[in-house]
Structures are given as structure tokens and as C-alpha cells.
Figure 1 (cartoon, rainbow, N blue to C red):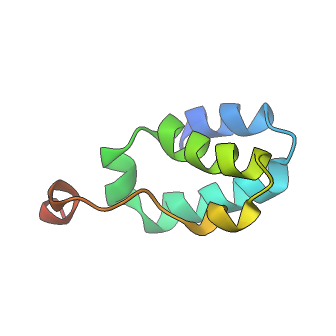
Figure 2: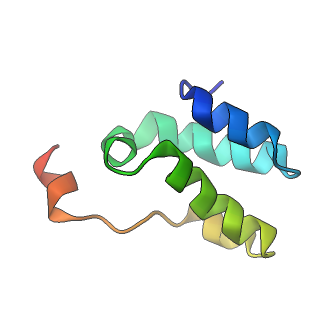
Length: 73
């Protein structure tokens, strides 16, 4: 499971559970810096919004990087 309980709680409320959970698991393991900058809820809702709108290809997009994110790495 994703280590972020907020993500797990949000996933349980979504109809397309498997797709969303798999994408968020990747984010948790590969984008720790981004998760520190964006709230976990925002990152999840960014993907859920596009999934619900019938655009699952946008699940692979990430919010834009900023200098503050790069400086923290």
C-alpha cells in the first residue's frame, strides 16, 4: 500500500480504484520531493479529476516542477 494514509483514504472513495492506486504507488516511490512540495491530496485529485473526465492518459502527467523543488534535491 502507499505509505500516505491520506492517499489510501481518497483512493477508497474512487470508482476506478486499481488504476488510481497503481499510479499513486509509482508517485510515492519515485517522486518523494514532489510529494513534499504538493500536498498528497492535490497530487491525487489532479489525477482523479482527469480520470473521471475520461482522460486516463493524463494520469501520467505530473504537476510542473519549480525551482524550489529542484533546489531541495
